[in-house]
Image 1 (spheres, rainbow over the protein chains, first blue to last red):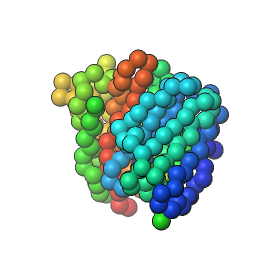
Image 2 (cartoon, rainbow over the protein chains, first blue to last red):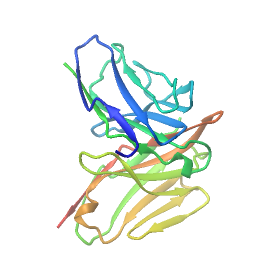
Image 3 (cartoon, helix red, strand yellow):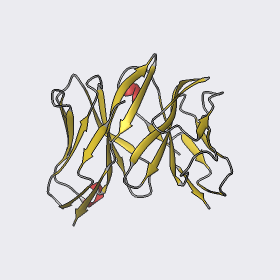
Image 4 (cartoon, rainbow over the protein chains, first blue to last red):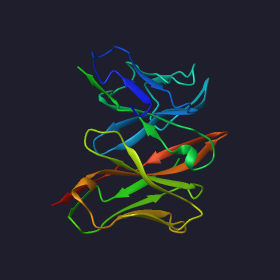
Length: 116
Length: 115
């Protein structure tokens, strides 16, 4: 389904719990991204990774953590430190690099997290 | 960091009319400007993009214009159809150090095309 798979599609969490969202791609893309989508806020970058074993904070990294141990996987952990975690989370990937075409994003279908 | 402003937040047009969405960016070093379309309940998809060395690009009913001096770019949709109804996001790409590049998105425009 577009080569990038997110799971779970829906997730409910109690306050104080950490939760990990999965993102897997079979596109052989070097770069992977996590965005958060809230109504009226657009897509805000949480973390991104241009290469295995390296990642960078985005604009709203506080309360989140990531790892990039494999090229095809970029899981996102929403920790209890995230003050307002209820949101729609989108993972994306691209071939990476400097050319414009290398930064065309392919998005996953998203994961909706609700904190009860 | 880069800041992207997008206007309007909502836009309603009659079928067959044109629609224009405008974005401004803050960092003059930004060099790539894509537009994504997100239909209701679906993932965003690229519809058109433009590089900083080009002033205009067209693809059938869609065009994007870029004014580097003013640091703004616009999406133009002509002969709108109901299937054009969606949220449209602009973005800009900026080198963020080393081999890292990131896209910063605008807040989106909800376009409604009325039959």
